[in-house]
Length: 236
Image 1 (cartoon, helix red, strand yellow):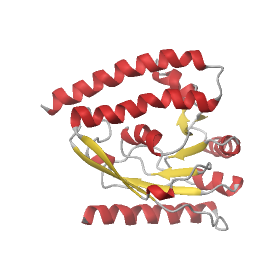
Image 2: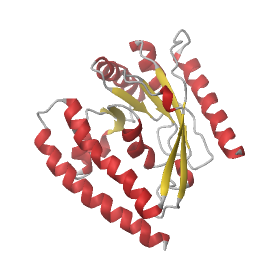
Image 3: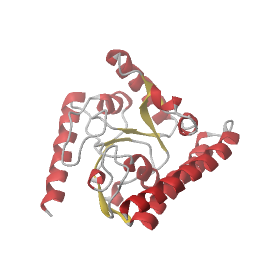
Image 4: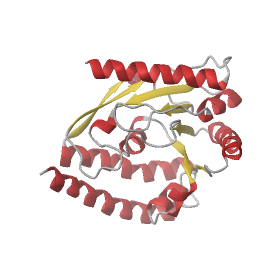
């Protein structure tokens, strides 16, 4: 039964992606706010469609910590779910992405319209410099940035090592960091086609504005907070 329900979700998400992306291509000369508002409708639809087809819902803790001004969102990475759900939780934002994602037909076209920061992971020094430079530029233009410091999705109940890119952007630009933890991997695991019904919890921490620490110290502070949130949810 879950296979059929997951298949129904997949079909609906693909059809809606094609329709919204093809229409979105006509917005190539529109401003970022207009493009984001239109293209994010696909993600918003997917979260709604997950609820309809698989009864996957969202519980947000710390919604009051979401503000309108731009900031750096630093989150753990377990699933495809968070890249969709964050578009309905946070103001207009973009991501740091590996360049290969832009090669994907249709999906890559949509991503390209949202001003992502594209990096080559093979050259870490060049990548971090680009992240800081372009990240500061996006923030100055009112666009928040989502950073997944683990670099790749991790299994549920596992937090990978955090890289310093997000902290370095905040340190250089002076913008705040909003830490986020979620447990989406429990219902939509990395690489899984079949998804399970249930509630995904997202914890949004208080903005971090004390940037007197070094990027590595800020990153360690955020990872410690993330581990604490994970422990709390697992014990509930």
